Image (cartoon, rainbow, N blue to C red; front, side, top):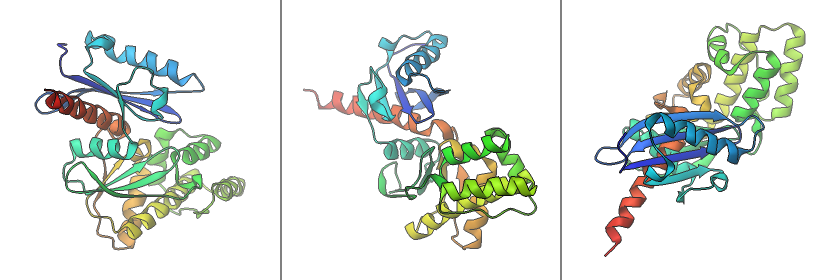
Length: 276
């Protein structure tokens, strides 16, 4: 691969590092993305290893990159040139594939965030779910681990549910207690998972309503690839007559990293233009 206009975005989350390699010249093009789980390892070491693993197949070295930008827990990225707030990178990453987006929902591991766009990739306003983890990806992962199913299985399982079981929509501790009681009562796993999805979706839809979100709504982050949660969001949004079209972004997991790479390229060329 010929270097010269390549940028890299690195999104460091609580459980995974996401990366995106972008050719910025002309019409920006996403060349590659990666998602590396941290799994109790040193995050700085995971970043360096994942970086080399992404560059080598393309015949590239770190020095070939025009700009390396971080987002998320950016202080853990040792050789970055710049850092961007995650709400701006998720907005930019979603807008790259979906310029029609007017609202972006970042479904993260620790919280969910609703972002309003101004008709371009720029953030107009934002709001977040409360401090309790009951609406987060980490909470969903903890529940699925207890139920003995993988994150890849929860979407199809939820879609098969016929009688969703209601759980606490406010507190993660109470919701986990609810799930333990449901398992002991023999409630089918599909119904428990659908109940969890409806609980998480209820918090997000409530936020979308208060936020007066505009359609279409594009989802980013790891939970955006959960078909059961997406269906629950559409179901509850429809019941509240919010009139929102809701769908996951292309490359939804890497949206923050893609946005960081794009903003990095933009900043680099702006700096070049300002030089005498």
